[in-house]
Image 1 (cartoon, rainbow, N blue to C red):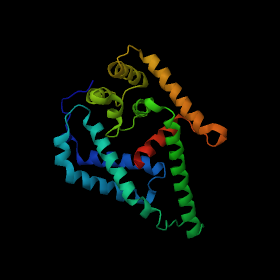
Image 2: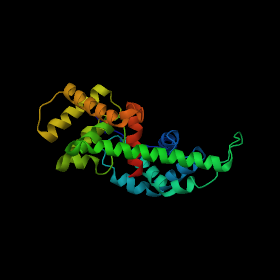
Image 3: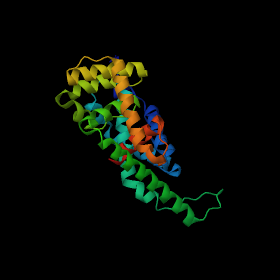
Image 4: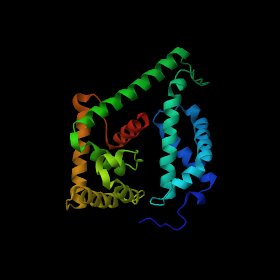
Length: 242
């Protein structure tokens, strides 16, 4: 359960904000969504926007989740905004590498090919998800909970409808929980939203079955070799592109 004592944005230092921003950006750098050379600039852009918006952010925080969890979600959204705004500019600039003998044209071709490959894999992932039809919103919410990814504005609402706020509170209460705890909470979510009476093991088996289905669709005919770890990356990249 969330301890509401001292659970406020005001108690989070700027050093902590900068650390969280750095961690958020590092995840996108690792996935080659953000060029390594742009990391510091992106972090500072996010921090500056956070400072300008801090009063509004503090006012909107209701204490239903951990303050740090809320900040991670805010900074992730800011990072995605920077990616959408700057990505074309990043990959139109020559990336200088003193230790590389690859020509400028070859470097840009490699970056363009990498960007295309990433975009293509996300498109294939989107297509694989479409097979879930009416279960699509549920699958996305449960995967994001399992992989510790922030929820978009409509993710929970698409699944839970009018019960979205109560479901958000349940999901955010296990931000740092073990997988066992996550499936316990997910079973409560299913029972609350769908009026069922299922146990955590049933939810775990159901979600593993959905993950296997996604991986089978992505890896069919040897086109790729995705696993659960790369599936988490695709889900995060999908969110960044939305």
